Image (cartoon, rainbow, N blue to C red; front, side):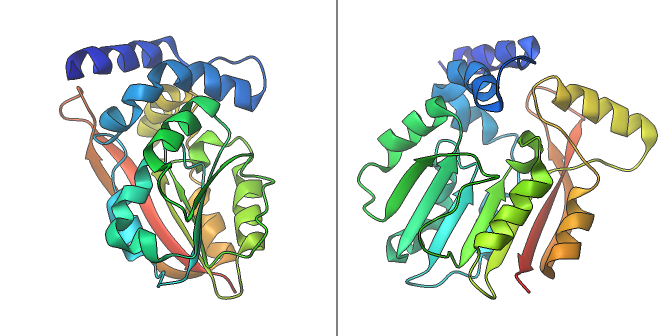
Length: 229
């Protein structure tokens, strides 16, 4: 069963993301067929998410927003803390992924699911923490998404990101760019410099980890936490 689900996702990844239509339409076309098996497959590819969420300095009564939150699976990493927050908003542009989130989180009274663009969405109340988990590389105007996240944060609030990045070396850069770009994931060496320029750094680290079905390859990613100035 798991192998069959993986095969469907791998086939969709081999086909690649559409280059036509709006950003929302491209996301729905690519992730719609993968939505049900999304979390199980990405658990082995999207490293560092649990650690990022465990590092978030959010206390009882906090307001938290995940931009590009997809299926809402990352909320499970909060554990018992989730129920103590005043509100948690999961914002995403893909209806198929949000449908999975609705089924998962329907009993969570403090969780709001929002279909919206991360570059323009603004909540009714300023959050204490905003984070992106493997979302910035899927947002064409990622700088605008970061600026919007910082703009909505309460004074002294935290912005956190975990995502893929470009390794050192021209040959490696071309390999990762081509591979991820085929699936609509756009790597950039500019994320971390831009984040550092806009926020006071709390934590920043670059790492590599395994890739499903590709033994020997280690995908580069980073974790970043910063405080609004």
